[in-house]
Amino acid sequence: MRNVLILGATSDMAQAIAKKYAAEGWSLTLAALEADLLGPIASDIKVRAEVPVQTLEFNAVDFSSHRKQYEALETRPDAVIACFGYMSDQEKVRTDEEDIRRTIDINFTGMATILSIIAEDFEQRGSGAIAAISSVAGDRGRQSNYIYGSAKAGLSVFLGGLRNRLADKGVHVMTVKPGFARTKMTENLELPAALTASPEQIAEAVFQGLEKKKNVVYTLWMWRWIMLIIKHIPEPIFKKMKM
Image 1 (cartoon, rainbow, N blue to C red):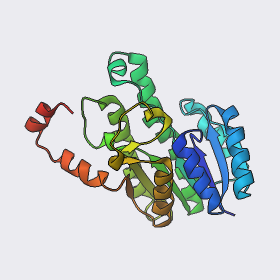
Image 2: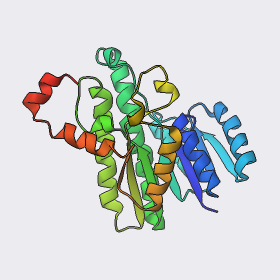
Image 3: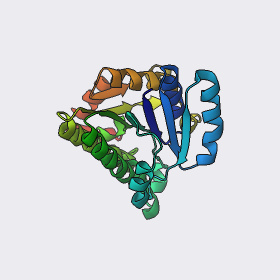
Image 4: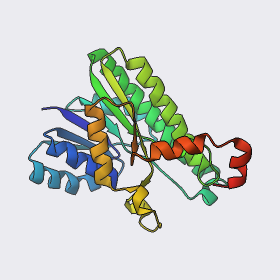
């Protein structure tokens, strides 16, 4: 039975991904900072899908613990999906040095640290798949979320380089770029329904994307074209748009 390790497994998106993989017959290793919240999630999946589910604590910003935690896993994964992230209010983060650091450390440094360790293992084994949740916010700097966006931009470039490095090593790396997503984090926001993905839609896109060895997946699909337009708006015009 193949095993998938899901990092940041308490989020709505991660839970949907876990349920999708369990339904497809994979065993699960669920990791999150708030490990006590994983018990009910694991129990529910075990009952519904009848697959083995392990849980463990994972702290994205405790960089020095990442290698030890990964090497201590009872089951080495065949696929890893990194779902953890942090988005603060833009007005707060741009004037709060600690919040800036937290945004970068969780969304970029923590991702780069743990995925580098996993990539090393997969490369030695000659197989494996890695996916990480980035964001369309990283496609172009905009005043509305440029600090969060810059961390996600760094993550996307990191994943692209990792994909390039491992392309001939039997290891596939996929970048997932959600646009608007319907989660607890956005439940108070008025989002356009046609451009907003559910956690289940994102989970399906992640699963199918890795199965088909896609390099970059936008969810929903139209965000690829929306961001293509946004990226090609000339800078003198873009500055006046105040996006």
